Amino acid sequence: MKTAEFLNELCEVLGRNPGSLTREDTPSTVTEWDSMGHVTMIAAIGDVLGVSVQDEELRNFQSIGELVDRLHERNVLDDKA
Amino acid sequence: MSVRITELTDNHCPAVKSFNDRLRAGGMKMQFPVQETPSWLPASNSSRLFEEQYVALDQQQEVRGGYILKHQEFKIGDEIVPIGNLRLPISEGVVDRRYASLASELLFDAMGRQRLLFGLGLGGYEEAVTKLFQAARWQVFTVPFFFTVQHPFRFCRSIRFLRRSLLRRFALDVAAYSGAAAAGFKFLQSAKSKSQVRPDLRVEIVSEFDKWSDEVWSRCQSQYGMIAVRDSHVLRLLYPRADSRFLRLKVFDGKQLLGWAVMLDTQMTGHRQFGSLRLGSFVDGLAAIDDAAVVVGAAADHLAKRGVDLIVANHSHARWGDAFRRSGFLSGPSNFIFAGSRALDKLLSQLDIEKDAIFLTRGDGDGPINL
Image (cartoon, each protein chain N blue to C red):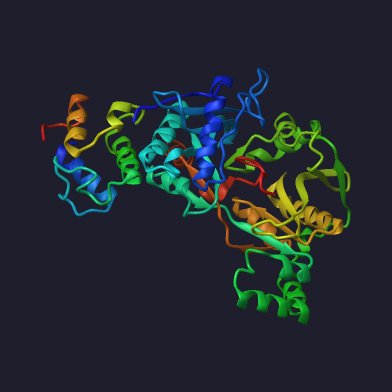
């Protein structure tokens, strides 16, 4: 899955318009990204990409860019953002 | 915030007490157990039904949260599968926002120990734990609630959760004193089906589950898509002989054992929902689907003869729901919620097990703790 597609999946689970998440986004710029939104995103990462949500480092991301970088490190996204 | 989640030991108990004190100071009633060995279902070598208690420790070794994992075997499809029931979980995030993310860490830690996981009870959709499960995209549904009023006058005068406003109290008092409540409930609860009337019906109260319950389990288990193992070993742990509160009823048609029920008969005092009612509870029961209404009816009759004011039950299985309605029970709003992990949901989907075929009662999850 390409990064843009993955970000659109995150947009969908957060109830946001497609394309509205960028690398720069953080909990302070995304209103839906509260503690429950964070759980929703982690669950979606497991569902969409098939990666283990037991990966603690993967769960503790503070920005979309940080998450995307960690997913690239694990080779679960097909491209570089 | 960095925490380490580990099994509770005696060394952690002072920190658990401090954690509970902070919760209480923040207005939370919920508390974490303060003993290494679970008071309910401690682990033993001979049982696959047991509980474990986990706490989240910060770098100063302070307890900031915890959860209980109840391990239990379920029959799912044709297989016996170990499943986890996630109880509580509770974090300091409920009273201190600095720990807001801890609840999710507790959840994912539990999922790491047991992928096939569920929560039950939960208290309603507005509760934080329900929202947490929903956020994790678990399958969430309401387990239906059934009730039958035996003493309408006392019900109307005592049912606290309906008597919340002056207008409602006035209306309920009018219904009680005018006899309208008695007539109304008699009409509404008159749906008892003729199919459940068995001339040779016989019941027997017993003090313990024994081999006879293995026979019921063997005969009936295949009729249910997902059901906790209910053989005599498990039932003796869940409803131990030493606990005299449990009423264990065997139901016969002539000489044939149809099934069993476990009930409670509790005099409430100042209960937030039931006030001072004498509450009868259908906690658990098992029979072939076609005999469910007979067992429900027999249990309700037994509780009615004991003098309870109100009988309540929760049951997720659709055909048992029909059985309650055919036995004169009414459906009411339920805050008894089931939440199943994605892995459990996937397993059920693979086996084409619909939620209507899942068998859950008040005896499942954390048991009949509030009844």
